[in-house]
Length: 355
Ligand SMILES: [Zn+2]
Image (cartoon, rainbow, N blue to C red; front, side):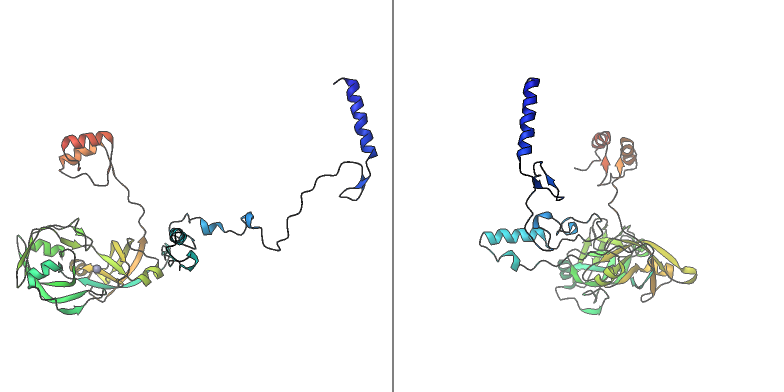
């Protein structure tokens, strides 16, 4: 475009604007300028925010809580709802709105570090044996066990029946059978019993066979059983009823410090394992050696003075040098260990690597 052409164009635009009717603008003053385009107002919805705005949605309802100790605020079990919707769509179930949502899982808030101490009842366990049904039949000839006395833990009882426990070095008479039958036979003894019998069991949680030992014979009126595993020294533990667990903020697997006894024999037990859930009644279980050392008896009161919630277990890192040392000590490599590549090579060369 030449300069002359641009001048002519400007003149045409100026004339067109002058010839337009004068219209009032937003401010009410008359203007010759082109009106500003205005977007149409959205339809009235009252106070309710529009459905597409997202304003009605609380993020806490859809996003799981970052704090794993707090329950997520899901209102509906999403997986259940999805399943129900799919089934209903396939004509195989009621519409999802008629499904009653699963009850919200109640998680226990951890006990605050500065919470007051808790008093619990002490129960002292003497040596006893839990029997599998097969072993009970072998020892007592098939007659059901007779209940001599029910124990604090719901459903558990001391049976009228006893067995003789024979070890390499000694024998214990009248070892009480505790019912009902378990899936595996387990003999729970104190360390002083172990010394007398001549076995070296490990301290382990009742019911655990992983750390158990054998080398024991059980004698009953109808027969005998050789135990190749299942002998333990029961680790001290605190049974917690579900109500106390929620109320006190202590959970299955927590570790506690518990003060027991009075006067010169008072002691604090560390690393007391919490065992909680349905079928538990609140009671601190120590064995007879521990009870004697602290001068406590069944029915005494102990005080929970500190509590820890375990974090994820740390896996040990094993280097080649550790492998050589473990091999020299004839020790095993921990099952959960992380091995460096050279440690793995050395361990398999030495033949101490499982699998
Ligand atoms: Zn117990």
